[in-house]
Length: 117
Image (cartoon, rainbow, N blue to C red; front, side, top):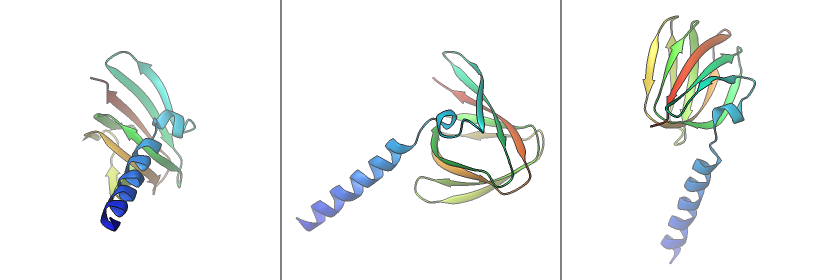
């Protein structure tokens, strides 16, 4: 019985953490700005100042294009962390993800294109 209660508690915690993950435009409207959207894609301009953090949020499959150099630390919903260092003009692909991010470098600007289908 104790194992069942423990498993249930972990399941509820995990589901709640996923449910709390939100649209990045709503989580960080000062950083994410929608510049185009239709039924297939959403394109966002991301302007993140040095030291800024973006709370837990989710993306469908998407790509990022670095308009400026960027050094971002990203931590996924399991706590796994990685640092992405991008040069101007770099393009990166991401499968669907829930994560938070912090800008470890200078102010940076990116374009994020999220696929809807």
